[in-house]
Length: 340
Image 1 (cartoon, rainbow, N blue to C red):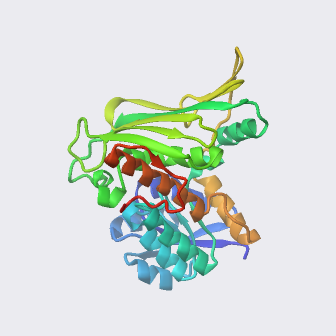
Image 2: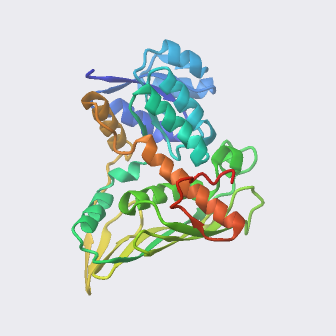
């Protein structure tokens, strides 16, 4: 196979801005069909991409499109349903993040991928950031000394009206949670990629300015395998914006200020330097390029579904800790807390 033909499921903002351009421009990749029950939106995206096939029904699209792979860019509550169907139909799959509503939900997709033998990945695209690889190399080389502290912060404003198409993001049954699920999962994924699963979590989740059934504020303390503490705060109730990540060691620290863009600040002792590590212009493009090569070379993609499910396990533990008001261990072999 020298070219992957894609069925893109979901014609929303993320597909329009980043996913469709990535699928269309990656080497060895082309979009063969677009599926969305919002037919006018699907047709508009298809026209933009020069795609002839449009479908409103996912099952029909799987059967008739002739695609080799499916990119699932639907809302969170549909991620595992669409992934399981696509894998069952013999398609390779990339799923937007988070993988599912819970660990148990995510493991349905993991199991389907294992049964199918097809390649399956989750689009945690920050694993492709140069700043992530730079930080990972610092850890590997021992430049931090002993890591003693990690700090994560995200705050922004979210207040969708009930008629807003994005209102599902504040409905737990559809989103899995508030800022912890939406932005926290991206940051937790990199935490796991850098340090492995935390040993334990203690969390508080609150609704300070909203009446949603998801949190608008959260504070989390996590203990890493070396007993270093992670402190994390997430807010959807401030019209200011903040997005930061910091690792402090006995010998050095690194700051991503802000998390996604601009130079990173590296401090060794009392010497500080600014390191310019720009992202790809389209941050989804490296995800697609890696996946296409994984299919062609018959290797694992950078973030397989089994890895993405770890973030859902951590998120489950955070919410369970907040509900129980106690520290939750993640070292148990039974890590699904959603229905505990």
